[in-house]
Image (cartoon, rainbow, N blue to C red; front, top):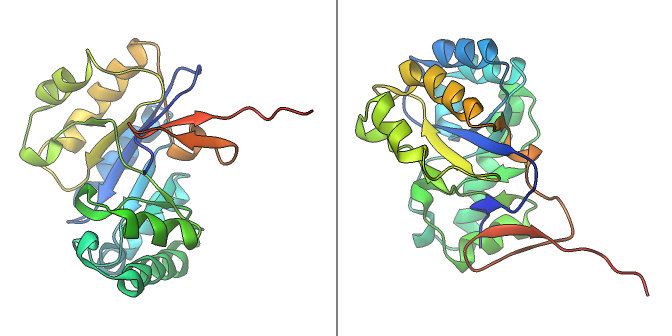
Length: 215
């Protein structure tokens, strides 16, 4: 299973932004994140980084985390091991050469995965990340509609999905972040909430700490 949510006592939620389309709103998004003192995780498609290297560098220079969202955004569940591995390695190479970021997180395109996709990620040193809350920003929802999807569901350890390049993500981001904080949560990066070792992922995709016992 990929990680959908984290079982944690800390009042943190991870905000994630998929980058696959254009870069017209990146400056606005980065300004909003800076004004709200937030660092989040951007999952970038390799082809997007090639098209918009300056935007990718701006994201890294602003202190945000970068994960891979594949190289060409294919339906990875239809690919064999070698092609899946190539999607990862090529995207990570482009991200590293463009931004200097060392990538450890992987979000499969379309949220699709199977045993092969997870195996390729794990065997190549990447942690597959999904989400527990979807804003549906890519469907042209307004900010209020997005928040209505989140406000009664959000809880500690949630991973929230957003996308740049949509109609209302940039102009809704400030309101959404402030509303999340008003509920008592900190907005953080994925790496700030996930466990790096001694964990299990249950059947619902919730990552849980496993305590070590000395005998």
